Length: 86
Image (cartoon, rainbow, N blue to C red; front, side, top):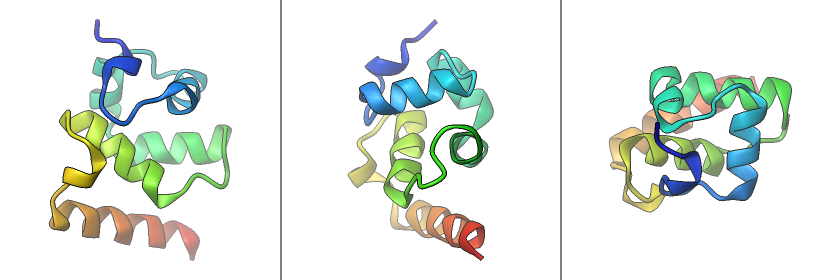
């Protein structure tokens, strides 16, 4: 099983948040997906989790730094994030 901390974009804070919502391995994270993971973190741990955390989660799932996410992926995630603000 892959350790969360070994994924790109995952530092101690995000790792702690992921564990608090029941995501303990990289496999758990991939199975849950970025959007569902973000909703769990927002609901249970940090109601002010930001768009950049969502980008970081997606990057971790893809195995890349969040700055390397495609523009299409960023737009999709931004639209999802904005839908939560309404």
